[in-house]
Image (cartoon, rainbow, N blue to C red; front, side):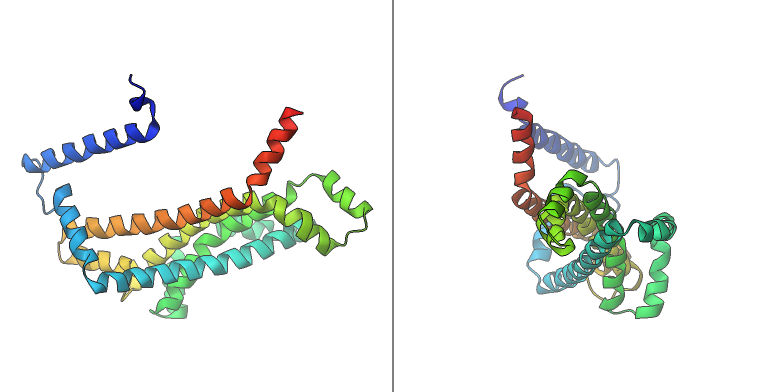
Length: 261
């Protein structure tokens, strides 16, 4: 194997190219109808055409607003509640059955309820996005704060630091890797929640656009919409991952120093 093939991104490009060419040949060979599985070339053409239409950016903006707004609500409440539960073990034990019950309930069954309560507008989609993103952020925040070594807290206590000072100086910075990891999952779940809401009761957004393409039997347009959703979700995930690597790099540095000594 050449040195170039040993690079992961080279193999990724090669595998993707083979899959796309196989897909193209399979459809062109008449093994499946283009109405069901369009050619990659047709999907690319449709994607370019959609990107030239202002309405596409309107739908994209609606979905992005719903997902980000829901994520921000989930992040705010999830981090605050996670810190409170970590600081108050009796309260955590009291709420643990409720949290577990919420975790095991399939969130999709709650969507009609939220639509009934909040209507068919953007509010219901924001609520759905927030509910789906909430639990990963809460769980990771709780785990991050609880995993801080007791000796570190004892040092700050011996120096006379108050509970708020320990929270700001030690607990939140130390828990940040876990918190941001939960946010990486949460941002994807918030996008899923927004799109599910648009599927069921949307009048705008990429989820609504996908349903419109499906009803019109525009398979290429449906694939192009899915690609747009994937790109937006990937960019949001990348932004959170970039924050995690930028804000928590000192953790890795500290670990390396501890290993060296």
